[in-house]
Image (cartoon, rainbow, N blue to C red; front, side):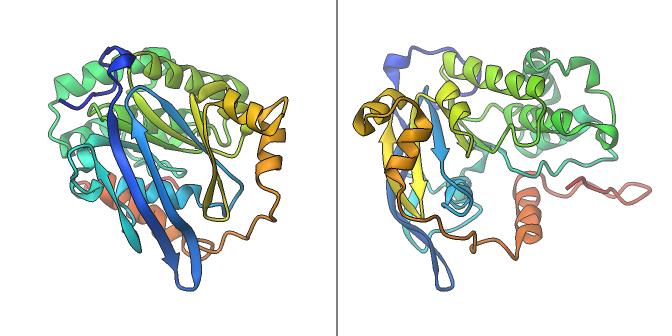
Length: 289
């Protein structure tokens, strides 16, 4: 049976949960990713590190099934394409996509129901993780007045409530204050210690070094390095990950062409795929971008 977040397992039982095989992705004449191959194993925090435009977000969207590869394939452990089994994934996109007229719990509950999870199970999971995020007392509040940190925590709880096998995080601490960022990182480490599998996209190298067991450096659409932080340091004879990154990415970073003009469209895609439209209320439900 696939591992779900929060289920305790021995890390020695690690197995491949997702396979990316010879994947390329083009946007017109722009080759965003070039012949990428890698495996995501259970019980690890995998960091996707790279500059803006490197291809991190494109790879996450391929892993979540939002994008289809131009060539190659992305599949889960049983060989099923990821876009056919989204219920096995928990996704926290860069834009939270919360419905501001709903409370935090209503946002989470609705998302869980879409995945066929009953309210009792969803609440049990949500309340457990909400304690660690210091969000339990705020679950009954409408998200309209939430700070950036509270919205991000709500999105994280929403992604965990249905018990995914793999959690995909796109810049999860971007824009957060120091305390909120530390809380999110602590939860990621807790999930890892319990056998959870997390893909953690960030351009903060110090953060990746703190949180990730394995780091994949993406530069201009190619994987430049893939391994534990200590291995990357020794390979480049560097004292910190920042120096290692510079050593491995000497070529000038390209501009972010693949989504510079369509960010609003992609945000809508995230919401459509992972939090489908709710029934009409008396007034139009608005979202927070």
